Amino acid sequence: MLFRQLYDNESSTYTYLLADEASREAVLIDPVFENARRDIALLDELGLTLSLVMETHAHADHITSAWLLKQQTGCRIASAKVIGAQHVDMPLVDGQRVEIGSIALKILATPGHTNGCISIVLGDDSMVFTGDALLIRGCGRSDFQEGSAETLYHSLTAVLFALPDACIVYPAHDYNGRLQSTIGEERQFNTRAGGGASERDFVEYMHAMKLPHPKKIDEAVPANLRSGCPEGGEFPLDSDWPGVRYTYAGIPEVDRDWLEDNLGEVTLLDVRQGDELDTECALRATLHIPLDELGDRLDEVPDTRPVVAFCRSGRRSALATKMLMDKGYSKVANLKGGLLVF
Image (cartoon, rainbow, N blue to C red; front, side, top):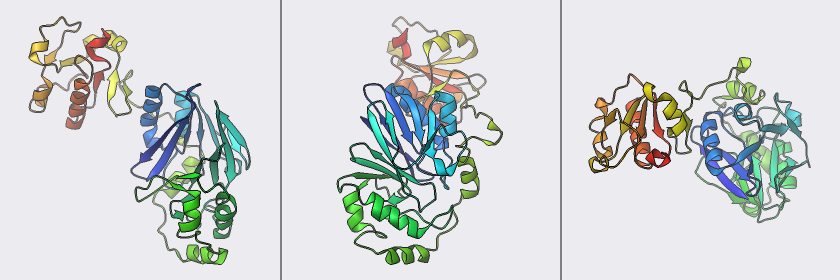
């Protein structure tokens, strides 16, 4: 199985990618709207087909990209049936089994943070994705969205803590840079529910917490009940420059076919060194500025037309593209593969 743990800086949300290496089918757990382009780029670079997006609950601190990913990839959306979210293809219930290629996932109902919280367990009990029910040395709050400290205590101690000690815990959030834990660790050391804490210990702890209202709750929860679909169902375009795709590194790229169709509409920037210009080149550049001089000569690059940077392999021109983006150029792209594709 291929596995990646991805992170959103603004909301401290973890998104998880699991994929069957044989079939190349993939599932994303708890994706974030603003990171859809990043996640699609990673899927493309790894040669994966997104089959399913799974939500551990209706989030209050960010908007999911489930609907957007469904529009762009044709994947299905899964979330707890009790939530009743729109655009869901697979309403999930406790004990349900979900298969993505050879990957088996089991659904555990773990309400308490919200009424619709689930945890997702790998079939061999080696990994569990706990959403906001169980966090590393903590847990989700229980003071909104039909939350209940008593219910959450049961979900933690009777459901999640019943998993094997070695089962690795992957939460939906961590605000201190911690990546993972284990059930055994949390059963012993969890600040709120571990170390033999009684229900009264836990409930009084949770009721005594005075937490600020989540900043995005009024925006996020209604949007997540639509699976992230914008009001009116309008489709947000990645770019007003059709044909541009972004890499996982965040670099906009165009391919050879696109460039050949649009040669007359762009400024073609060659960032190779002068001694490389003696070799036969399939492209006639509009402008030649070696990469090591570009930082001092950015003002020479016109911004009246889109800019496509190229070099021998597309590696140096990727940096040139980033430099132009940082300078404020809105339409700039790297030639994918550089001259090697000609």
